[in-house]
Image (cartoon, rainbow, N blue to C red; front, side, top):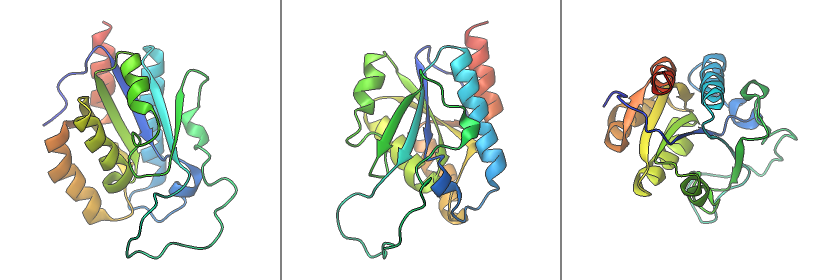
Length: 187
């Protein structure tokens, strides 16, 4: 479903837009994804709406078939990209699982602020973004996904999330469409 409305109480959640993740071989150019995310953050701040900046700093316990790298992470692995222009009022979350709600207190934080909707963007579309969107949906938030402000490590996975999964969780739209809705709420 195309983006149609933003609730009066909508927060922005930006997933894993950090130095280490963006250094990985993602399928879309980094610059436009980061630029769109930064535009969303600026628009939400301009309207006094919450901005949540999420980084991944570990891994969930449990076995899987994928070999985990035993190499050391770079010193700036978890640092947010500077283009996001982190502000003192931004809420930051450090996660160790794919989704931003598990074990982080993000649900309580947003509900204390009276939020009923979230706009989500970031990396990777099929992992952190999709997991966070699923969790938000299950927690009762209206979900909107900024599809031009996200990318993935795998094009097929990215397209699957955007075309098959996201329409079942909420609405999708471009950064421009979301900012226009945000601006029209205050007009």
